[in-house]
Image 1 (tube, one colour):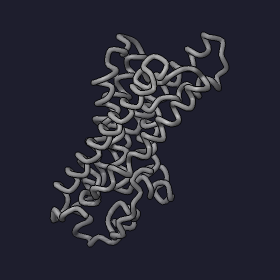
Image 2 (cartoon, rainbow, N blue to C red):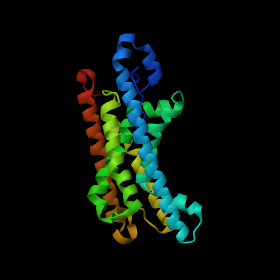
Image 3 (cartoon, rainbow, N blue to C red):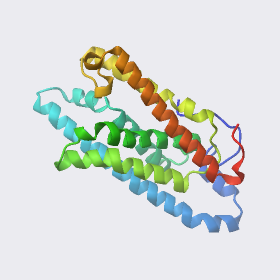
Length: 249
């Protein structure tokens, strides 16, 4: 779902970074060592900040659920109800897993430029969508504000910068943003299905009771268009910064 189309090109991101690294000439290795070290440091710091934000948000959610005398399992379910949380979990995994288990299949998956491009586009939409649609719901102070800023503002900036600075370019095709729509559309189905059970909507623009089915459908189409536009922007920048600027297939 995350744009996992195999371009069948032996390029960085479709194979292990370490395997690619061993194949480089010694001179090129030396030239790229500082960049490699900076990438690891950046991923470690950014991943730690996102993990801290997720832990803080879960702590706050659990406290709220406990104050209502509800079971802690319900805190987990409420926590995982939001696209922001699920996407930041993807972000944390993409940044941390390659550092902790570089030889694993999961690390290889998260190193793929198509996967990193998808995750970067998702979290970019989280930041843009929150700023444009949900900023009025932001709390004004305290730890809840810190978690809010970290998850909706800082995380998108850190991930987009990581994609710009460290992810190999020239690997995306115009088809990838269309494939990337699978994840947000699956989330919408998940959120609406949960709402039929819990009678609680994660986001006001999905509230079929308040808005009606037609308006919610229009909102979903609008959001899909937003995801697609952001994805196409990432694909365009990828080709612009890629070697040779080859025409997209």
